[in-house]
Image (cartoon, rainbow, N blue to C red; front, side):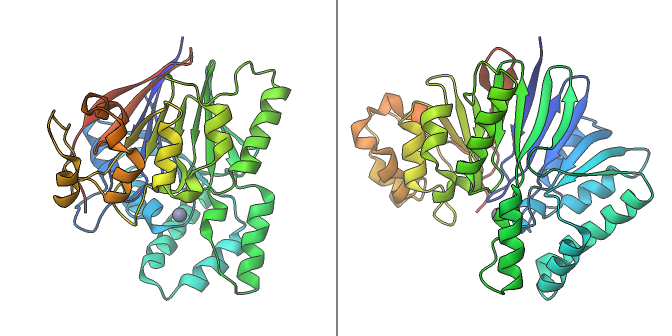
Length: 351
Ligand SMILES: [Zn+2]
């Protein structure tokens, strides 16, 4: 009987997901910190638990809200006898990284990415860290009955990215985003990164379930992709893959860049999937007699989200079930299709 925990940290608008696997095995998927924070919340989290070894660090794609602060974590865990076993990324060739960095060289945030890759390259060449190209179809990790595999980026998307860069058209790094599927016994989890390619990913997943004779293809936990934007909303994902009343979805933002998108929120909650969002401002449970309009005026909830929730059609006592809250979300995953939200640690919301 296996179980493990996923901690989706509130880092404002960005991703920082910690996997707490059995036998003191830890993994980090993406990292972000705001400029006002001294260290990345993920580092604070891991230090508080006295973690000395990371099984892996995964960078889903080269966007700042997924890598800012990651270098600090890499440096911490490669000093004083601490250790990182593997670095997973979207699997570009070294040439692609070089070109990518050249293209972005003038932009400040990319000098951090350049430093990060410099650091990784040195460690990989001296065999201190193993580099895993976590593109689609790569089996990344197996720990008893917990398996982590990549379902994106697919070859076509990487090619589209390279072509758009060669033609100097609009370039979208989200095409490169790693999507990890974790299975724990009968339970299926998907961490969507910032992908927009759900159609192809789900096709691949169905095929995989067929080949491996997997009884259930439903996802019990979904890290909604792209911070709940329109792209994170795929009808097939919600229609076919989530299990009513048993599934949990987490969006890693709130009230910023107009995300999550009301349509995404609506799609999720209409399937009776429990939805959490990490960064809503000063959200508190409404009490009987509260007028939601006042919440909007005080900036406690955005008008667009309020519209999406259609609060007027829900009695106030139902609000807790449908309302996202702000804070770190820790979810316990069990091998029998159960996942439950463990703790709801509210931290100061990040604007
Ligand atoms: Zn992105």
